[in-house]
Image 1 (tube, helix red, strand yellow):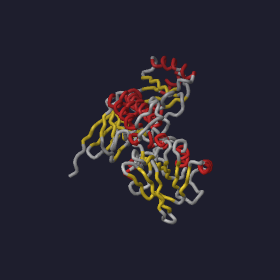
Image 2 (image 1 turned 30 degrees about the horizontal axis):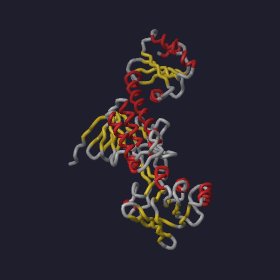
Image 3 (image 1 turned 180 degrees about the horizontal axis):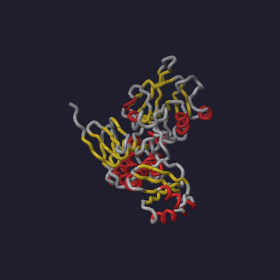
Image 4 (image 1 turned 135 degrees about the vertical axis):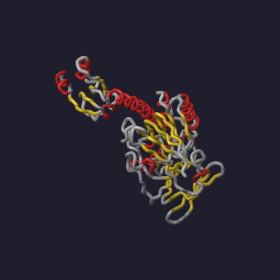
Length: 405
C-alpha cells in the first residue's frame, strides 16, 4: 500500500536553488511570504562549481562561486525562507492552489516559481565526470578565462558560442586549440566569427575530431581527441577544456504543462510570468541572451517582486472586487491626465449609489484588469454576484453609470 504523503502549505514554493531561485526567495521572504525553496542537489546551482567570479558587482577582488552562493543562502535564511533538499517528481499547477510533489511530501502554494536552471551538454567521453567543473572541464569562458592566463586550453565545438568564447579566451590563454567535428574550414558558427577565428594566431583547429577521453591525476592534464575518419588518437596537453556543445534546461517535468520553446525553455513575459496564472519562471530555464549569476539575480528579483504583487492582487480581487454585492471598479492608467481627472467623478459617485467603488491603476501592473478580462483603459467594470455584468468603456457620465446599475 503506497505511503500517504505529508501535505504542507506555503505562500510560495520555489523549485531550484541557484542564483535566480535564491534571489526570488530573498524577495519573497522579505515580503513576509511563507516561502519554501526546493533544491535536489547543491544550493547555489552551477555557480558553486566556479572557482573565480570576477564580474559580479560588489566584489572588486573577486570571489568564489561557492562563497557567493553561501552568502545568497544566508540572506534568504535571514528572511525565513525554508529549504528542502529533495527532488521534485510532479507538479499540479492548475487552479488557485498549486501542488509540488516530492517523494514524501506534497507542498501546496499560491505561487510556484520555476528556477530549476539547466545543465551544459557534455561529450560523454571517458573520464569526463571525473574532471567536471572545478577539476579542468569548464563551460564558462567568462568565468574561468582569467584563471587560464598564459595556459593552453582546448575548446570543444564550432558553433557561435564555441568560436566566440574561444576567441575571448585568446585574450588570456597562450594557445586555444579547437576540436571541430567537420572537415577543414567548415564550422557551425556565423561567417564573421569563423573568419576572425581562422585569422587569430592564438587559435589552432583539429578538424574531423571528437573527444575520446580525458586524462590527469587530481586535475585535467590531457585531452585525447580522435579523428573520426582515420581513428587516429591525438593527445593534447592542456590545463582546461571548455565545452560549448549546447545547453539543456531542466524543464522535463514541466513539459505539456507550461508553454515552452522548441528547445525546451519556458516562455515568460517581462514579469517572468508563464502562461499559467500564479506560475513564474526565472533564470536559465528561460531563453536568455546571457547565462550569468548577474542576469539570474535580475530574473529572480523580478519573479520575486511579481510574486508579491500577484498574491496581493489576488487578495484584493477576491475580497474587494469580485464580491457578491454590487461593486464598481474604475480601471485607469495614472499617466493619462484625463483618466486621473475622472477620479473626482468616481469619488462623488460613491456617495450617490449603493455600490462599493474600487480604483485600479494599471500603470505598474495589469494583474487585476487581466483577471477582469479588461484590455482597454479607462473603463468602469460592474460586478454583481461575483460576475462581471457590464464593462463601460471610456469615461462615462454619472448618468450613464447609474443607468447600468
